[in-house]
Image (cartoon, rainbow, N blue to C red; front, side, top):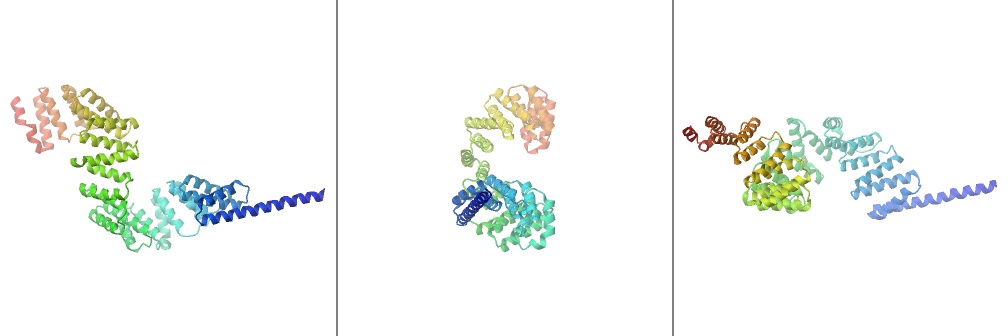
Length: 455
């Protein structure tokens, strides 16, 4: 019996050895598929290996490579889970922590990225990149103090790296005026010395943005145009140039740049919003604004910003019926949003202009509930009451508007008009004088001489 037991144990041991060899062969085969780019075949074998009771070393490799495949396929949550499983088998593996941190960055979980990059360093992750990525994570988390500490400690060792200098410039760009100038100098140097095209390209964008923010607008435009000579098919450069032109009030130049951006990337809603906003500034271009905002709505039917701007464009284009429909869609999606408040306000304006004062009051009051400190709402309520010949309420609301913002001439003008209707001519004259003080060019409108003859 004793000898028989020995035979059974030997049989089981030899069987396990066969399985171990089979698992090792499976891993080698999966790795070969992975290296050859046959992702699906590799993924299938790795998936089987992690289901079997194989050795920790085989399971760790299978989990790591599965995570890499999921990352390549954009399935970051699954990649994160696989790296987590690998860490359970190898809790002191710096490479796994490093790869996990990279997934955290893709998922915008910057706190987790910092934690895992630090763990990677703690457990011996080699290479300088880990410090660069840690600085990036701190920067993304807006922890500039920690980012600067690493820059100070590692500057000598890292300054030969393009990506380090780029990240260093990003951190400096959030600092003092002196730091911003240093960042501009670094970005400019990278334009000519960076070995990696990606760093050079991003430096054009960031340098232009920083120049613009620091008031050097002409140079910002020059840098973007220079960048477009190197990267003529890049939509982001055209978009940034268009945004700068828009801020400077150069509407046609902005539209020209944004049209080029759209031709290169027609699915980018930022470009379409830019085209729509700029087209709204010129009456002849209203149809283009309608087209741009409608494009966004076709892509994202519940995009509340696009719906609001489309309704605004319809209103400015004179299509009040459709404008009302789209303002109501905005309100239905999020009745407490700022876009809903502005929709209530614009609906009030539409109904006021149409002579439906009861509806106008209802919409103004709905807007008022969302923004009770808005002087324009009181002013618009005053206008509606004035049109309804309720001059007491008109005066009361004009006064509330003036209390919130006493420096708007139309508030005083319309208060004067309401006083005239109440036959309070002295008060009317005082209101008109105040309006004239604010805006002397409107003297003829107030017609003080006529008011005096009425006394």
